[in-house]
Image (cartoon, rainbow, N blue to C red; front, side):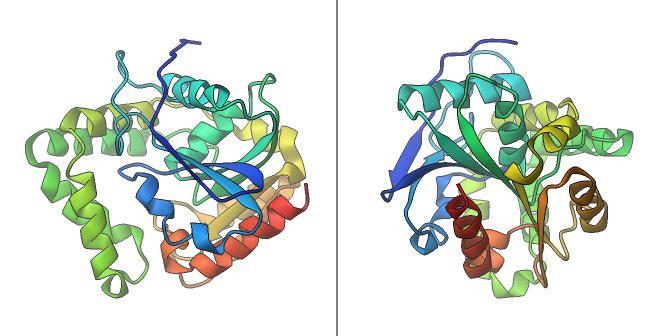
Length: 255
């Protein structure tokens, strides 16, 4: 595994049991702003992934392994002995990689609109197509991609416009490198098998990026906790923050 000692930008909110929050693709720590006040007895450590928010790109091209190592270095720099992780989408992929490190004392994982599968061939081709679009017209991609994450985007226009504006500040290189890293990531189903009820999955009924029925079946097979939230898409922490917070609080309280 490639080692990278970069320390990423982070923000700590609240007091209590430490939970690391990892945002998704095109996002930053602002993703969690509306969710954090709903959390109970949690010290939220929000880390911005390389090339996102105020975290710079790494000195080498991004891979899931190098992204994971930079998150790991950041966690270690904070001297957190025992913690759990909430990972949204790409952040969930990183969380599954972190779970493989026996030297990290992770109690539980919450996959928020995320899954353990590698990209199938058609998805890999789509990542390549999007990377070419971003190279020449980043804003066009953002204007299409971000609203599609919501089941009913017309109710979140202000939030969507903020996300587009923020994502537009990312460099084309950061977006493209992250796309390639996601395209080339490995399957992590074994983590779900090994961690069983220490993994909670929160999934949206109308998430256009993830097959909820397929994911629920996988969770049942492996003894993972599965929670389906009705009438939302891929952005539960915005679309139904109260229910997402309730599920996170409940899962962490079992430790």
